[in-house]
Length: 349
View 1 (spheres, helix red, strand yellow):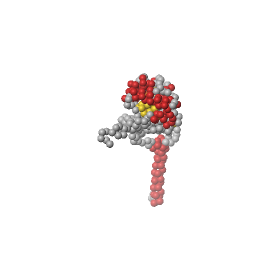
View 2: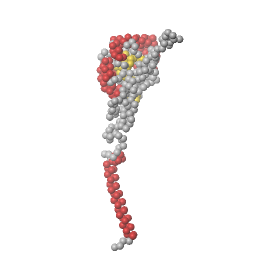
View 3: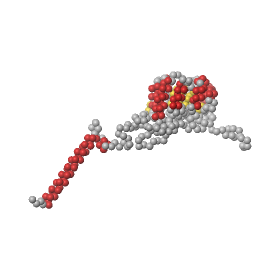
View 4: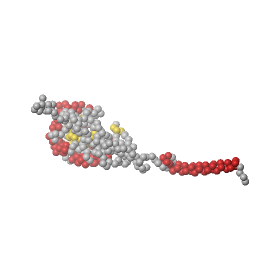
């Protein structure tokens, strides 16, 4: 039978329409399969799963991603929670490189020490008053560094253990010394200074009422303690004073300043003097410490086994969190000049 032009045209249109419908059916089935693959166990659709790509950069799908956050404990901001996967620190500079994430350039390393060349001169404290501290006493370092401080020593049992741990982790600290203990154990003061730690005056016999006495009595106590320290280490700088019990008064802060000492308070206190146990000490220090914290602990004044045991975990944990632990700057005197501080040389006008 002979087909006319109209019949041939209709046949061609039918073939094209059939092909389009068949393709649509195949595409529709594939799309439904992708949707089924992209559904989660709860039945919700995961667009990225359907694409077969979660767009996580270089991180693998099973790599935990830690999101730093800050929370407040007793009115203080605390450090971010510990990541599930610790950053690699091999080859890190002293003080530690900042935490790294895949695809994100590393931040520059945090310096491990203060500027030890702070020029203060006789009678000039190395750190300025801190408006957040009692009567201007320091509660933070004023830098990124964290300062570990140890009170009530030196002690023949615990101070050597603390010094050994600080050596092991290459950490410098600040020791607040009691005059009576210094007089009994001058060799321990010499060891503290020889290892590069900073000294702090903590009164002659841990008198918590000292600040309520006359300025003359306060001065006499501080001078007596400094003299005992200088008898053990004649050239050592004593640039800080810490009042026992934190019982600050304006008079105590003022006299310390007149003697060239910054009043040293603290931001983190695990109350280890109450012997709460190593776990309690660890928890407070590791939870409350942030950059710039001054941390109070004790190497004397009672049984300090818990503090020593806690340090074995605190030191590596704080370093792993990228805190730079450093002694407070002792300060140095400016050079003495002939004609200003010393007699003129012959021939000088």
